[in-house]
Length: 474
Image 1: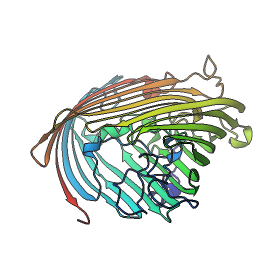
Image 2: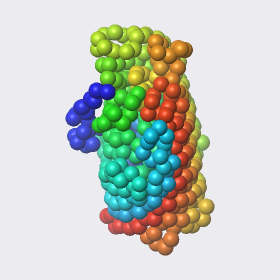
Image 3: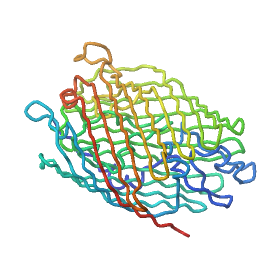
Image 4: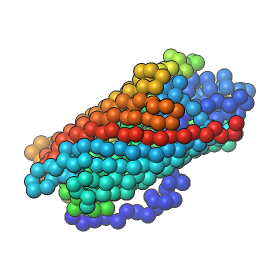
């Protein structure tokens, strides 16, 4: 299979340039120009030109257009203005550790070490989060698969004025085993957004480089009215195509604009236009689909830590021949499609819940072309005691081709992914944590050899970590 070189535009500079309409939740500062929490109470966001710039007048950017995931920590676990570092040691047994060997999957025991450094700083006008976590994994039997991983995240928000907020986000991950990450549960990040990258197709033991980001601007021009615009991108690259027969590189670029109206203290209504360019790069050439969508959305905030959001509208997909290379394997297609979704987020003192569902046209995430994607995700975090925490992550994704393919017997057929993660973490003293984890992955993609030959992966893991935290600006 022909290997495609990764576009250098998305590497290096992308880590600093690409970003979201709103970033993660900062702690509120006492003055009137405080950077607001992205999904906080609806009376704690940006100021307006037609009213005093105080926290009672500020609107919050609704989750459907904010470009960020819901928080994964309970209220008692949230904190900001800190420098945090640590070192994690883990061992795991995986029944599909290296893919097929002599016609059947092989198990192995792996050992990993992952240092992590994170900073979260909030001022009266900014909120900055940066995390860097390299990792090193060693296999007991198949030491040729020993690997070095990289994970980096930048999340930045800056209030240009009491009425205008700029936000930016970028996440970069380089790995050859998606399960050997220091924060495996982050795979279940739940977003209420309409524009979310498709990384649901997983090659568990292949070299992979993924990058996603968002940059945006919001402006509250009246006491109860806000507009905003954002640009997004995703990139998925397999350096060694021989490891992933049936999958290919893919990328997407998009832009959106929205108008939001606060009709009461807890009710938001709005409309958004969205454009996306979805590309995949199989050995046969380049496949491209462009989409245009107009969505209506509604968000209800029963309390400051509880939100319910829904969106829906028509989405037009154009996979015309002008977008393909001459060797493309996909036929041309133009169609109107219904798109809809909803999400719920609740953040309690000891519990956290986030659930979402969406039906949209999306990039294939390694498949041959654009897909109709039905995806449901859920994350539950529960603090069982002062030192014991449990979390469960679940995801289901159905990927159906947007266009009919000659090699398939039925229109649009493809497959689905089911992912489940369970974690139990016990704090041992002030700085030591013990974590037990179980991951189950099942994928049904009969026309993707790397997945159809080994559709199931199970992993049990034990990890011990040391963490330290230092306050900033105190």
